[in-house]
View 1 (tube, rainbow, N blue to C red):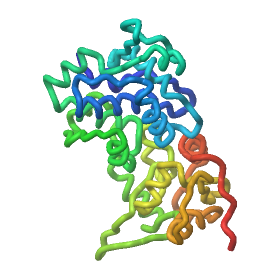
View 2: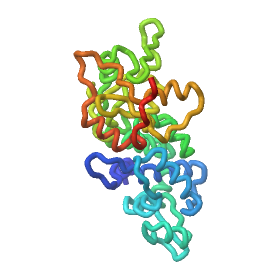
View 3: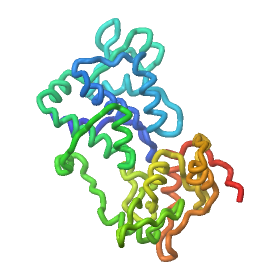
View 4: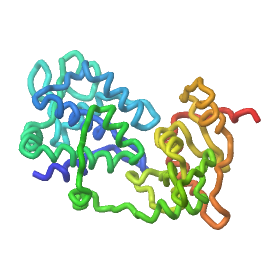
Length: 298
């Protein structure tokens, strides 16, 4: 059985590019727990808060329940659920999962394959990360689920991930924005080499975002992470949005985040294409956390 193919083909609700990372997040969490205890089960009532936190931090902006993936991941052949009544999930209702003592864990065949081939776990984790989340969040997400995926050879995944990133995108985007962060204007270099500047996808590559300049922003490392976490966004007339859910009391938080609200993007150059409306709309609906903050006082 090809577990990488099965991982890549998790059945998910989808419509118009909407994000639904519920199953990938549960599977990453289960892989992390498997690393620490290969025979352990996950009791729903015990892990519910952990899964809620993951969905809140890394899922789409709208509210959802961890009961959905806990039940539905069974249909993908990588997960099993038992209750006090025996094998089988009682459904996707929170009350049933709690009252019947539902527990879940990786399917027996998958657990056996992971024991035979320990490197499989890292390849599965890397595949889930690449297919559902931007690179800026990978290390943080692994830490959140207690996962140590280890090194993975990219060529081992090319037969499953048939789309390849364009390595030229970074240079094209940084050039279009004159090597300055589009949010804060940072333009650090060591000699002639830019440092701390990255090419961010507005519509994530994992969700069909093209490697084109009009789907890119040159951002410093801080603002790239905040953009991918939904703290920052792009509104009408290419003005910066700041999530009302962001909280920071320090002068640095105000200067580097809150004060950005309402400011126009810096760049791109006149001969480069600005961020396309279709990509801005996707980010606002699928990543940005809530409505915009009021513009900072001048």
